[in-house]
Image 1 (cartoon, rainbow, N blue to C red):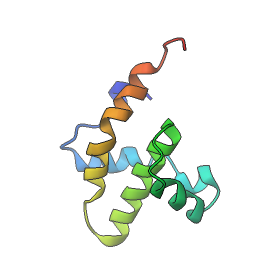
Image 2 (cartoon, rainbow, N blue to C red):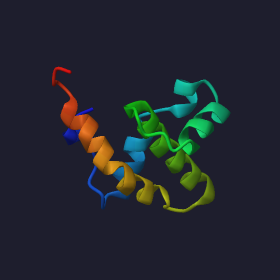
Image 3 (spheres, rainbow, N blue to C red):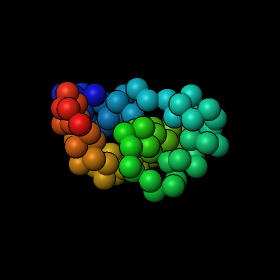
Amino acid sequence: MTLVDLPDEGDWSAIFSFAMTFNGYEHYGSFDASAAAAKSGDRTSLELIRNELFFAARASRHCGDDLFLQTYHDLLPLLRQHASAVGKVR
């Protein structure tokens, strides 16, 4: 993931599409495990951050709202931080 991959905050469709590029159910092995990780408040890894956005987007789709946009806004600084680190030696 690079900075170019991050959608503009005003483009809800692109944000939803971006959120769906990470499948938390598959990554964590189940709905329940993805939900637990998303609700944990742990944002220490890119996978946890991507899962939180994925889960918020899925919940918004289910509820017919756009609350995932606030989650994206909250996570964007962390996503930018991870994207900026791509290619750097750690």
